[in-house]
Length: 118
Image (cartoon, rainbow, N blue to C red):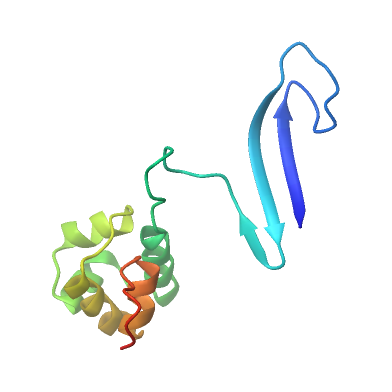
């Protein structure tokens, strides 16, 4: 396991300064990188669906309007999903078809995976 700690006003070795504050922590175990939490304590971490949807549509050259039309969803829904809201199961199904992906893959990315295989 590798660990990286970045301090403001000090160093990771603990040298004293007037003010030390941990500003970032990251650990790597094998190929898995564990970053700091985004959500407050006691709340679930958000799934990266918005970033994934944006990246996939940009990579494929699909504008928001075309994505909305092809999926049968409104442009405002596509914008909302790209900003990080998670889709419901029917939306995930429509998005999967539009992006030519398996529904199971889109459900996992959106955090909708219930353990069933489709």
